[in-house]
Structure formats: structure tokens, C-alpha cells
Image 1 (cartoon, rainbow, N blue to C red):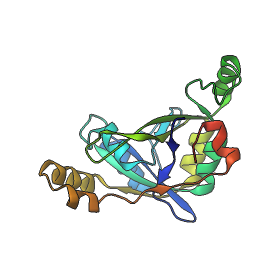
Image 2 (cartoon, rainbow, N blue to C red):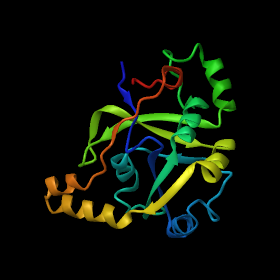
Image 3 (cartoon, rainbow, N blue to C red):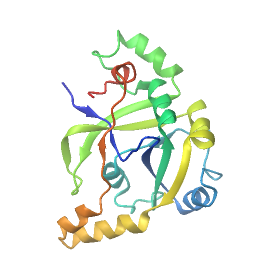
Length: 197
């Protein structure tokens, strides 16, 4: 069985997710503490609770259009609403009755879930998968207008960690990583999205 784990920095009220953007979107988001144009509400936006998966995706903030890493705290009830209104982005015979019912659910769901191999500090695959959450339509509106409690640009911190890794100072780099722990969801939420825990 695939080991799909939701791991995140979280407390009793919020969970931290990450996104990478260009300077225009990132600056506007930090100044307004939510997303404003040129962020496009009509596009699907992906949030990632895994810091190292975000580093993998953005190339440590070096990929074009992903030069700024945003640390975003959102309300737990918003995060769990997203999971409750989600559909896996791929067909899973253990979760879905058949392909047709999965396609119908996918088309109707404002949230998509992907499980991708988690990464270690060298951005190598680990033996469990972390969650990526794609928000569209109604979910984007709720994310932008209701769920966000804090947005911080952590690009400089990311570059500092990357430089330490480059310099071979791995243990020092590890001390700067966020502490991500298992985020347990009720079975009714976890089962339909193939969460292991």
C-alpha cells in the first residue's frame, strides 16, 4: 500500500503551506496579506504543505516565475474543507468505484489532490508521498478571502539553507528546516483522498 502522509508545520488553528511566484505576485501578496492581481483567481493554484517539496519544485527559488517562496498560514477548517471537497487527480481503483464515477467527481470537485514522493534535504525521493492540493473555482475564492491568516516571503531563508547545503554544511542546514509533523484528518476526510493516516 502506498504511504500517503500529510505532514506539515501546524498548530491548533493553522497549517502552513507554500507557494512560489514571481516578484509581482509575491510582493502584492505580502503587502496585502492575501493574493491580489496579477494573481489570477480563475486559474488553479497549487498549495504544498511540504517545504522540501516546494524547494524541489522551485529549484530552491531559482526557476523562472518561482523566484519568491511564500510561507502561508491558513485556517485548519479551510484546509479540511479543501480536503473534504477534493478528488484525486488520477484514477485509483482502491478509492474509486470505476473510471466514469471518478471522472464525474473530478469534473465537479473544486479541489484536486496529488500525492508525490516526499524529498529529503538533497531533494531525493523518500519512501512516502506528500500531498499537493490544487484549488480552483470556489476553493480559490475561499482560500484568498477566508482562509489565509499570514503570508511571509521566506526566499532569503531558502537561499541561505541552499547555500549551506552547497557548502556541505548539511547538519547546520537541517537545523533551519521547518518542523513538519503528521497532520491527522478524520477517516471520512482521509479515505476518499487515499491518505494513509
